[in-house]
Image 1 (cartoon, one colour):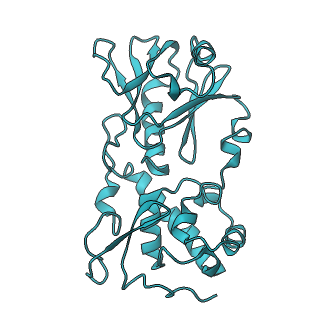
Image 2 (cartoon, one colour; image 1 turned 180 degrees about the vertical axis):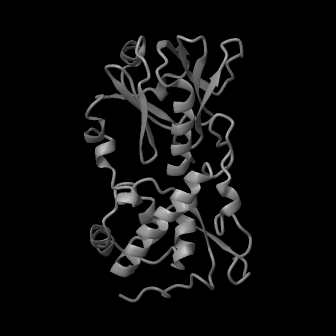
Amino acid sequence: MPELPEVETVRRTLKNFILNVKITKISVVYHKIISGDVAAFAAAVSGQTIRDIDRVGKYLIFILDEIAFISHLRMEGKYNIVSPEIPINRHEHIIFHLADGRELRYQDTRKFGRMELVDRDRYRFQKPLNQLGPEPFAADPDALYKRLSKSRIPIKALLLDQSIINGIGNIYANEICYRLKINPLTPGNQISLIQAKQLIQVASEILTDAIELGGTTIHSFDAGGISGRFQNELKMHAQKSCPTCQEPITKIAVGGRGTYYCKTCQREGRYAEK
């Protein structure tokens, strides 16, 4: 699934290719990608010029002349910029026809992605963006500690709760827990204030490094042909042995998500002290 670094990579890539380009019309192959009235979406977007592309957590926001729309890539969404002569493949569901003769196509193998019209100037204050917590770069340690202290849910699952801290997905949550040497099953109320501060710092460092390397290439992610190089830096996620102690890495499910950790370096209760 594209997480914050991957979505940021997509944002930067798209800005290099389609900024200030007009959308003449759109073709919707699979209607459920559009939240709400499909005809209204098409009418609102057609004839508008792409003035900017913003990002909030894992959401892209296409800012047009008079309107904006958010795009959530979910599991496998991606954008392709192609010539109209190239046949539409069976996984390309939304086609934005551009005034310069190119097409911006939204591709999604699983069809989980969504697009939705939002107010151009107030989208950060509208659902779903106003329900998101801060990104690690802007998170307040005291507020995070207070939120975690009220929960017995495993810290790994809490890291994936976008209302608590925004932009972290499964891959980076595994890496954060490993870097902190915290067992992913540790309840939130056993995380100390010092650890909450360290969590924010480590999360920010990992996401920043991942952005600089174009994200992580897992399964089908790429951004305009750019494949993320952070996959080469992964220490825990989908690895076989711990880089610290060389013991085999354990894989379990936490909140239904594949969770990798080292039973030696991240042993239960190691950092449970307040």
